[in-house]
Length: 262
Image (cartoon, rainbow, N blue to C red):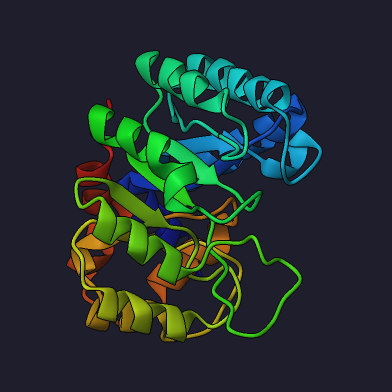
């Protein structure tokens, strides 16, 4: 984006952001809301920022505290929609997730890197998202090389989940979140299932990312997401050499088909 007219055009679209994090700190939440209004984001699907919970595998009590804060935010601000944060290692989080879905939360996630999303661990949550017809957003590391985060999910993991539960709507997080995004797109192409989606968020500014997604993946399964990195994530779409109607699909039409809650 290079001008006020570009920002005006963006605001008219009324974007839907499927990957946003709220905070325990209200000053941070006020800043978040400020930027959502600047960019004209109509709906932001928010979950608690994982690092606000103190550790990668937070206790049930800390997870509950985070979700209660998100509920406060969605009750206070009409642009916010809730996503239930859970730790797959906490058995108590299953009942908690169902409670928040009953109370109007719009999905589960971001499932973070406390543990790999093995079928036995994630099944109770898959059952819930199928029952409530909501998506599940899962943190993914788009990395090939050995790393110090062995518990992070890969695109392979999510493809297996999507194959096993074809009625579940599975969202791969932030294609631009770091690592080998080209390899991730190749895996998604080979995966070839209609119930796996990907959000466009992240901090990586490589050119050609959106073009390749549109060319090689299901364009109706590409969802606008920012992971709170709003300007970069919007610029990534705006700079892409794709038709304007495809950009509108990504910004708004596709997310509205995946998230059915008002």
